Length: 221
Picture 1 (cartoon, rainbow, N blue to C red):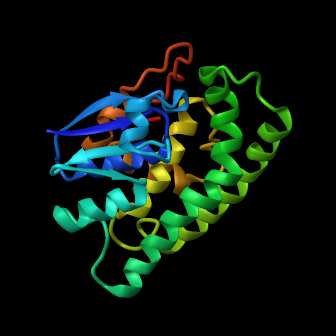
Picture 2 (tube, helix red, strand yellow):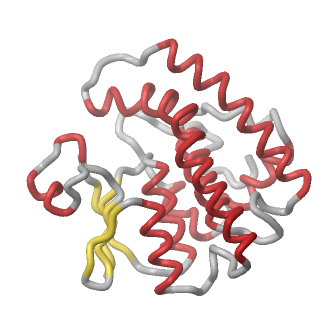
């Protein structure tokens, strides 16, 4: 069985978990306190980051590279289209959420509100929280614009781009930092992806000291 070293609310780990689940790959989840930089963990990934996936006798790191490996070795169901232009759009949006969205929103809301406390790094920086709360409005509006033209974020079928976005939004939704009333299109998109079987283990996550809001695992939120 595959083994994934992860942190429950990490959007990068969640993206990999969603890909594994969608492809029906059984995996053992091992929570890793990566910030403690244990010798065992650093042997698995000298970069000291999660996720780390052990599969097929090899150890894989970096969430985007892991998802590409899964796509190449387990191509069904496909999460990255075969058409070059469509592949580009999926990769562009994965980069958008894992880079721009993470820098402007996730790192300023989730990391300030949760990670600092879990890691014993002090109290949230109120300026960062305000900046993140402002920035997420822009991203919600951008997603709404995309979904005005498309059934899913990258086109007419669900792709890794949707999982990348949903990984970030599900983590933020756990701490009630998403205004779902801002866009019905985005809310409908999240309801569709949240109802997939691949999402079940994520919606069951519980972080000690941080109970999720009542709507978190409600498919009819």
